Image (cartoon, rainbow, N blue to C red; front, side, top):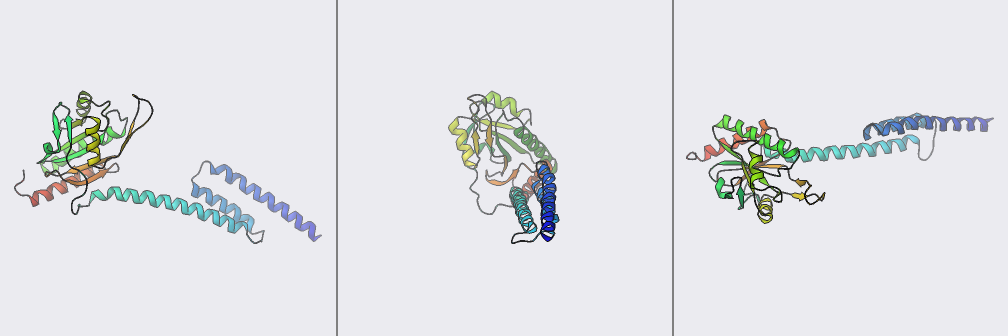
Length: 267
């Protein structure tokens, strides 16, 4: 009698485990990992009250749930840390001389030779991209243009927006000229040879890599960073993609006012 009862209990337990596992497995394809872990944990908890052994369903379920939870927490904290690093430019003041920026020689959108010395005496916002960029570059350049106008309104000081192409194969002078005029009347467009654009990107620690779609139809992966340069031609700070135009303008204005206080004869 006892054996029959035990056998019946085992069959009932297996049926319960199967009933609990099935909906959990189906839901796993449509929910986030931490929610899936919670479902599995509840299923194992329900069956654990009816079984005992060296490794119970409850302990196994808790192990799985904890592992998934830790993985989710790690990814969450990693993304948060990267965002915090990107946002450091919002309030940071560079101490010492950062190894970013320096001499370069390119051609502007009028076909004239252009070097870093042509920016001396004014604040500049520099962005590296390419004219065939489908979305990111236009969005960033529109933001830069808006931040430029907001800064001028707040401080009375003009900031020069600069676009530097990392796609010399397709971005000739005319292409760059037609491109920058769509964003701001004072935006300067720069291009050059492979060697010149590569050297400028290296100077500003800009990453870029051409995709291998085809010789003519391709995209360029690149850093999404805007650099603020002071009137001495020195790197001041940077702004990542997560900055808004208002945040950029506020930060630039703070740097402009600080510069004015330290250089009363400037301007």
